[in-house]
Image (cartoon, rainbow, N blue to C red; front, side, top):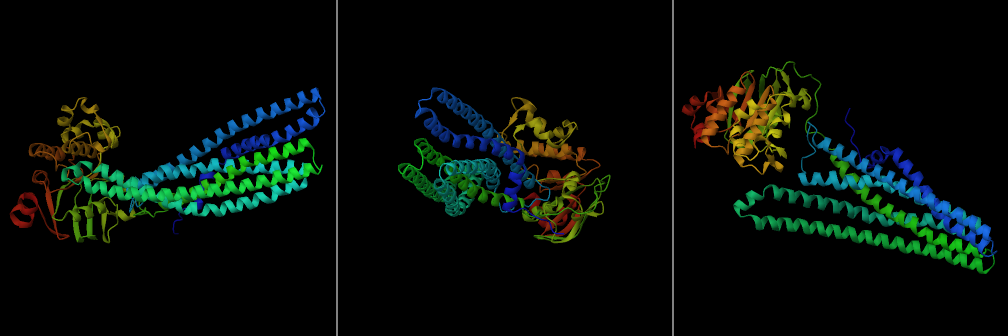
Length: 563
């Protein structure tokens, strides 16, 4: 059975439906507020007819007391209704954000393909906020409709003609407002797309700022961002113009409806069909209508923007995983035997390899793209185009990606550090294990010795406060501390000096003794510490032998490793 994915409508339904209780409570209290607001002009008319025109002090005190009670009730209803509505909106936004983060971090991957991190961050923040705000908009819309209905009932009791003006005019106004919101929905979607792209480009440039300065590429980067920012600005202005046009037209139509109520009420009063108090009530109710009708115009705009944002959220949530979970269980205990059979993926062709449990294997790929393809298959970020990767005799494609992560850790060359401390980064995946052996094996002790607070020194976002060599050693220690049955490490010492590299090679061999380890590297120091090395050239396995033997046998190997 093929999986079902959410649509924008599903996202809207689940967002509001998940807060059904809070939305219902806030709508009930908001309706109480609107009923109170509608009753105020009616009560003022009663005060005029029954107390002021008759000079009845007792009636005046009585009806002013009733008016005061209504004011207190509508004020409390507004306060607690708005509070409940805001809670519903915030909770819905939080739920959506968690769902997006869970999808992006899903072991099957796929959500990040074709999307820059900044774009995903924008969807998880701004789009989630807009969709979450629909809970508040729904409450406000229901309350406004109740207020309009109350106004119509009061006017019908005063005059059938006045009531009909409201009852017939309001649906027409709502329909026109809906039509006017269509351009806003389209332009709001474009606005969010361009804003997300601008955020993504900005994040990308900030990440590579040090490299850009090093190669003198600041002017090109600035020009690139200026172009993207200008596109975003134009999309925002188009959306703003659409919203202004929609708001202005709805306001003008609302004014026409209010003027019609006031005009009909004035003619009826002149004919003696209604009293002075009823005329005051009719005019007051006509003015009151401006509030709920403006709310409905705002709700229309929120719905237009919310639908556009919901479609973007649904697009991420509906992204098919790059790899799917198989039905086979993970072997227990994991021995760490890895087998590649006729593996073809990207630039790799018919790769055969057997890695024994506990073996320390080196892999040299003369083309970095081949190393990247192999890493994707070993971590099951992608399934091979042909052939298979087996763990203890079970193909990885038959295992759940989450279980694979528990058995195989692939530490990529550009792995980022987390914001926190050096010690916190190393222990991120260590559980209750002592991180000290891993820190010693990776040479982190030399790093902490030069830092002001040692292992408790704060690390900035992505480890930018550390040097390249320091970041590599902390990242390697983090991978070693995880103590997975199979560890695959890609170029862990490119920014480390030769002496430290030799010490790290010895440390890796000692700490990983008895567990399967694969080093994808061209470092002679690391390769010398391995049991044997596999040479991959032009996407094919050329030879496998100890490092010294390959140096003697192959010019290609010498060029890749010793040049």
